Length: 257
Ligand SMILES: [Zn+2]
Image (tube, rainbow, N blue to C red; front, side):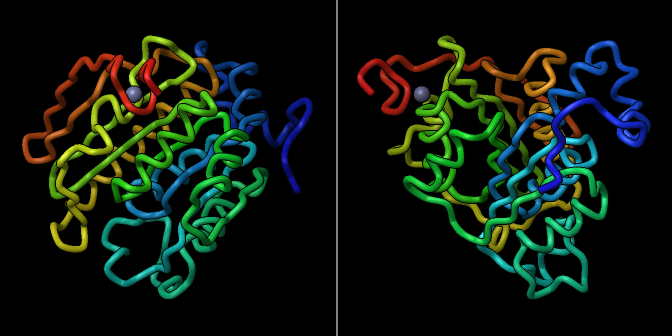
C-alpha cells in the first residue's frame, strides 16, 4: 500500500505543481485528489485516457476493473496498452501503465465483471465512479449501484464518430440518473466497436473529459456536467449540450423506486 495520507512531500509538491498553481484547485484541491478513491469500470478506449489522466493527476487510489484481455484490434485506440501487452489482462496492463506514469499512487486491478453485491460494495467505497464500459447491462448495473450509494457517476460512450458524456450525481436531489435518460426497458440498440468501428481519437476526447469531470468532482473545481448531456459529433467536431431532467417515474431513482 502506497496510498498517500498526510502532508505532501517535496516530490509531490513538484509533481502536482501545475495543479496547485490553479486557483480553483490549489493545495486543498490537490489534497482531495490524493485522498480520493476513484473506480474506473472498463480499461478499453474510454478507460485508457481516463485512467491515465487520473493517475497522472495524483488520484490517491484508483481501482481499475476489466475482465477482458488486450487484443491486437484494441491497440488502434486503447492507448493505455502496448503491443507487448497483447494477451495480458487489461486490468493488469492498465495498472502497469498507470504506475509507470505515477508510482506515488495506489492502483487496484480487478480482472472480473463486477456484479451484484461486489459491485455495490466497491461503489460504496468510491469518491466517484467512471463508467467506461461498452454495454447497457453494465451501464445500468453501475447506475443502480451509484444511485443506491449516492456516489456521483461520470458516464461516457463512443461509437463510430459519435460520443457522449454526462454526470449523474445522486447526492443532488435534482440530478437525473442514467436510467432517467436511458430507461432499462428502453429499446436502445446495442452498438459494439467490434462490429461498428470507432474513430481512434474519439475515445480520447470523451475519456479525457470523463477524467476532467471526475477531477472536478473530487477537487471541488468548476461545475459538473450534472443535468446536461454533451454530444460530440466527431465528423464536424461539433458539441451539442442538452439539458436533462430527473424523471419522477424513473424505475431506479424515482419516488416509486
Ligand atoms: Zn433516474
